[in-house]
Amino acid sequence: MKKIISLFVVLAFAGVSAAAQDDYVPTKENLAARENFEDMRFGIFLHWGLYSMFAQGEWYLNYGPDAQEYAKAAGGFYPAAFDAREWVRSIKASGAKYICFTTRHHDGFSLFDTAVSDYDVIDATPFKRDIVAELADACHEEGIALHFYYSLLDWTREDYPVGRTGLTTGRKGDAQDYESYRMFMKNQLTELLTKYGDIGAIWFDGLWDHDSDPTPFDWKLPDIYSHIHSVSPACLIGNNHHLTPFPGEDFQMFERDLPGENTTGWAADQTVSALPLEMCQTMNGMWGYKIQDQKYKSVENLVRLIVRAASKGSNLLLNIGPQPDGKLPATALDRLKGIGEWMTVYGESVYGTGATGIPEQSWGVTTRNDDCIYLHLIEPLEGVESIYLPLGPTGKSKVKSVKAMKDGTPLKYKVTDGRLVITLAAVPSDIDYVIKVEL
Image (cartoon, rainbow, N blue to C red; front, side, top):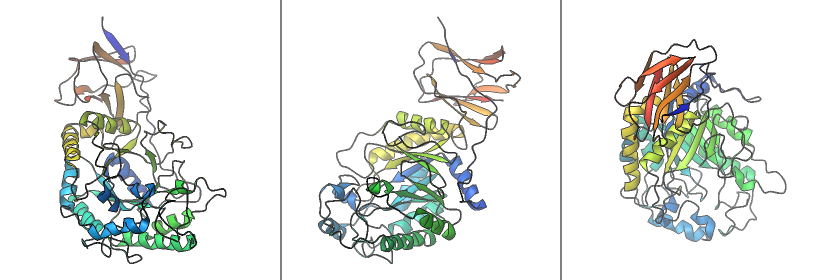
């Protein structure tokens, strides 16, 4: 007995606009950058820093070490195998269009040459190479956009107002001064936006450190955001606060969840906005390198995650934690290679696409680009021989062609009662069997 799956599609797609929020009016350059960001659909997150030396993840300092003892590790930080060009070429081959790099994480250590602190890769380590500069040069050479992760909190600086994390690092707590700390951040952000060429976005994290304060903490984000936009009008701003975007933010991020989902519990107070969207997820389990964490997701699952994100109009920012020696883990490189092989054939169904507005189906998801709808068959299809594609309420839409994307083979179809019926040539066994419907 034949199984038939019905897909309800509204063909009058509404474009997703990035409307101005409150009194923030993005510049023309910023709006163009948002469009470009949405077209990318796939990027790589890199969590790397002093914490990588301990191989226990990026939050290692939070779990007991004294900050002064932890800082002594900088004297042994010498990632001899670090090669920014090798990183970027491997990432580019995966089909990723941008990189987001941790310039400074919660441990306060800066991986760039900063004039406002000696706790950085130039002054505190024997390596004495500006890692951010080398990565920026490689990205610009290879045509890969570069975004900067920047922590709003700091577990080591005495002027940072103590929040709910980093309570065992040995800070005295008697020199807390947010105005001083905010000026430090603004100076560092100015350096990041003026010394390393075009930077696509600033990716903030850490606002949640003060979400339990008895009195609401004023981060003075409008001042920080306006400063960034004045230095670099096209630079996008996102903040991993797990809330609906604030005025001045240019894209919305979702940690470990697809937009509109809440499997982690972090998105309970987060509604999906009209801004460009980005989901971040780890390739294995941790963000920073952890020696015991070898549970990498398969190429199949990672490709399907990219596709599911795109079907919701979202980018996927996929994380890798580089090793202490400066190499990307061999398993991560293998996954990048596998993703790249798939993207070489099917990238058209991901890059520059948007959501169709329909929910995920039992067989998979859809993406759209102008007059083309891409059906991504990513679920088991045993016994399924046909897929229904309604042509809209009037039934007047014209079908130009229906093809299997992997080889261009035309698929049998007919239009009846305002519906397109697609007959599958065989039961697909691909990672993602993609059907291209051109209208």
